[in-house]
Length: 211
Image 1 (spheres, rainbow, N blue to C red):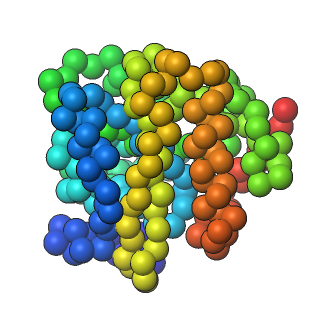
Image 2: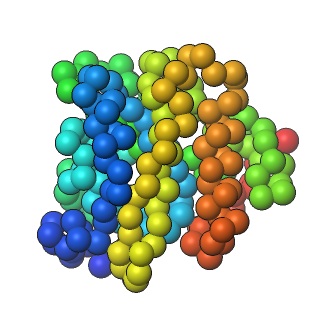
């Protein structure tokens, strides 16, 4: 119901309902002229984050997403998420996006808890006691372009109101062992789910891919 409300919500309303608690962490990297990656999962109202994040961040915000097969719902989803400034880029176009020339820092958002297709390289780990494949996109782009990675934890304050708490996973990605960044953000999401399991998207068939 909250996601449906986002189709008609005002800019002032979204600013009241979604707040970044510690934006100074993002600002620290922006002051150094660095792009950053923020990774999280489908936990609490991620659509509220998509709609409200650009107002909370001083530079460009970009959300990577998998295009929906239904053209109508894909269009509506993009309109809702990008209504207040977030730029949407499909995962298919992600390689071209990261090669773009840009003069100001930008923050790229990854949702890293969906079941990856068999065409994607993955990192295998144990997640919620299940043998789990995790897409390597966040880690690969962080290492290739030497981008700091932060985790974004969406927390519910009350009905229709959310905050985002940011924590640094690494600001030296090229020095981390293979798979380390992926392990870090997967375990951080697991901690959230174990604390309050009712706010995770349990219906999205997380374990479709088998080893």
